[in-house]
Length: 307
Image 1: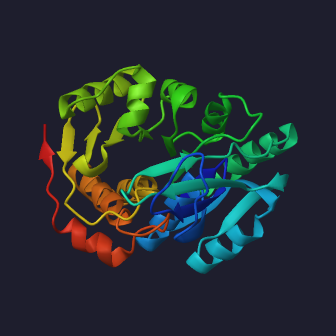
Image 2: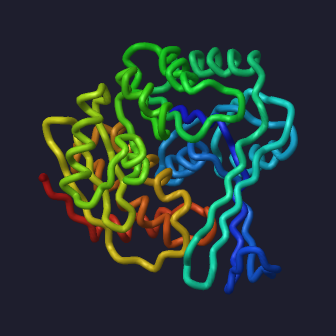
């Protein structure tokens, strides 16, 4: 069983505008709304691949019930800490050149009492899980050390995996988590560098291990991903597919990787499964995640090399 913790759920609204003009009137060519949030997306991916998971995190009174309906439809059990306020809405504007402009809301403030409740809930739920996945941004008013506080409440011996950015990532790495999964842009921000090659990716992945993480999985978009434990490093290139939306690809990758690790897969197989799920995800519109059939089709085409 895998516990996924989503501190900041959202509704992703993907808008298609053929000729998007800044500062001018624009008319929609299409709109898709999806319930989302990085850890919730990961829970869906785990379930679609046949794994068992439970979803937790903060949830807000306005807009929250649709998440219950969605997760129920996916067959995913959930146990949220409910707060006043509204679920944030993120906008993804896609123009005729397939360029995407993102406008992300910060989300309503979570009370101190709610923060303590989630720590206690994660502590209790993780007792019956093999792995805990914490991913996504934090709502307004929560200090950057909150991820580290969540990590500390997980019982010893459980694998903790995080997907976050900036100061949150720095604190998680220092806490010695089992695995981190930044993308290349997050790596660039974290180290204040420009990544221009696979060699660069490998170098910074190894630095994340030196800083405290046991494993680092770095996604590189259409170029694939790098996976290392500090002793062995593997690379898998993605396959060419028709890209509809890249939103949720990293969450899908994380879902497949976590399930593979829980099932005892070796590092090459874990990486291959992760890249297959991430690639399958970009073939769907909006923030819809992958289907298992598409995942299996791509999985059979991938190769992994040790570098």
